[in-house]
Image 1 (cartoon, rainbow, N blue to C red):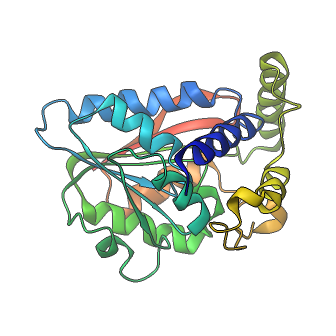
Image 2: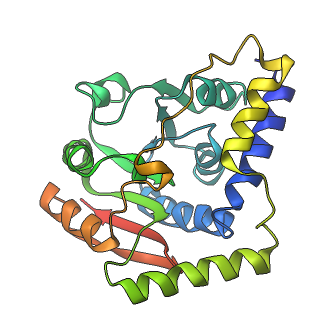
Length: 248
């Protein structure tokens, strides 16, 4: 894929995503803060980006920790094509999280220093996600981390509603509520003649009518502890937007 074309579509993807995560860049910086700290004393750290999409987080992490081997994994071939066209040293692998052998497909062995994700794991059903967490607990070294930025709901209905209000009001103040919608971005991609040779026609299938798995922050914390992580908690939050860190 042409690099200029790909970069234009990734930039448009980033603006589209800000419609749903007004503080997306701050979330990226927080994830980078954690990864940079954990990898500070490691000569050649390994960082894996789960559900990397077109590489928005992967490329930012490479800039923050240039000595790291950053590997992005995603199931969508078109988004991976956009990521690879960026011509960064980041490696990209097509695999389905939770499928047998997905960890081995990355080709980085075990002993990872960090696994990260942003607005991706909420598309995985609970039972499958628990398996992914067990896989990660086996792959990440002691003292390494999983860092997940996502919309995580509160199980208490009044607090859940208030957190959503806070997120929506923040989006209004940031001026992103009129940004392109996710489905409109995909429609535009399919209509672009410059992408006719790269776009396969495949498109992610949203679960639960596009609402994701609906799992709470508490569910994630408990599932990660069951999987074998030693310490788990929220290190940053804005409304229902969380960054959860699990220390192996």
